Image 1 (cartoon, rainbow, N blue to C red):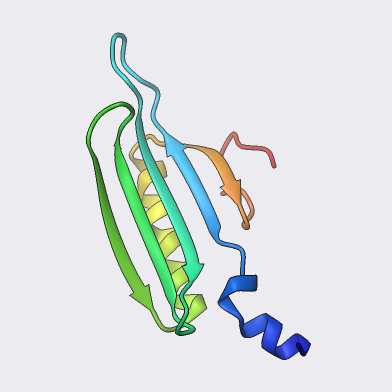
Image 2: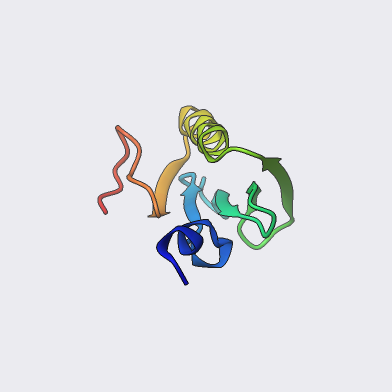
Length: 105
């Protein structure tokens, strides 16, 4: 398979992930926010957002984008919004840690 075909093949594209948590109050589980960006089988990009409280109910939202740059921008926008709300990045995969986070890759 040529390099050009491998680059476009979604199965060769590793997902980008960001996992964030809040500091829990005493006697509470931490809240979390998980972002996953991956290429779909049609060449578009899917941003999966999952949030909730550890051990409790979770919510999910799937957004689909045609362009990778637009999808990455949306992912970083959500990340920045959650950082302003007090979440801290605990894990990153496929991207650099956000400026000002305590996460060190």
